[in-house]
Image (cartoon, rainbow, N blue to C red):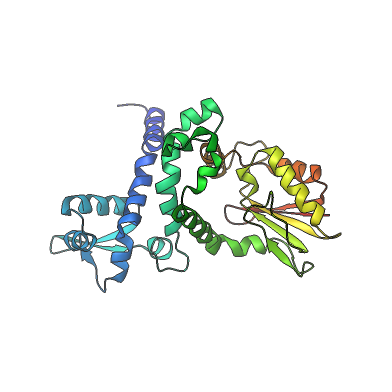
Length: 299
C-alpha cells in the first residue's frame, strides 16, 4: 500500500487526467436534454423512461445518469430496488434550458467549439497561435476570422455570453458608481473600423482578452479619441493574480485564448499599462464575487 503522500499524488493525477471525461459527461447531458426531461416530469423518472424520452439507449442513459449523480448534478432515490432520478438545485438553476440563470448555451459552445480547439493545445503552445485550422479545417490565414464560421455559431456564441452575463452581470455593473455617465455604450461588432457612437462611458466586456497587446492599444486609443473629457471606459475581464499564476480558472481562460484567439488574460497591472498607453488616466480596478473583474479609467 502506498504512503498517504503517494495516494494523494496519484489521486491528484487521476483528477487532472480524467478532467476531460467529467466535462464530456456534463456536455453530453446538456446536449441530450437530460436536465430538461427531468425538469418537465411531475415525478422522479427511471433511466428507461429518461432513455425513451431522449431517444437514447437504455444502457448508455443509465451510465450517464449515474455519472451525473456522482458529480452531484443529479440525485437518485431507490424505490422497490429501482433507481429514480431528479435534478439537483444546481442543475435546476443552471442547466435546465428554461431557467433564467441557465448556462446551457455556454456549455454547448464549450462542447462544440472550445473543446475541439483544446484537443490541439500542445500544438497551440508550440506555434503560439490558435488552432481553428486544425479543429475545423479552415485555411491557416483565416484563423481568427474563423471564430464565427457560420451564423449559427455566431448566435450560439452570443447566447453563451448572455448566459454568463445573466449570472454575473449585476455584480460587475455594481462594482463602480456609474451614475456620472448618463449615456453608456456597450461596444461590439467591428469596433476596429466602424465609427464609434457618442457616449459618456464605453464598455469593453470580454473583448480585450481576444487580442494581442498592439490591437488592444489600438482599440483603446480609438475609444480615447471619441471619449468626452471626463468620460471613460469600463473594461470587464477575468483578472489574473499579480504574479500571473492564479486563479486557476483565469489561467485556463488564458490558455483558451491561446487555443481559440490571438489574445490572453491579463493582470490588473497589464490592463493599467494598456489603458495608460492609450491615454486613459485614474485607472481603478475592482474584483467581484464572480469570474470577472471591472476596470474603470477616465479621459
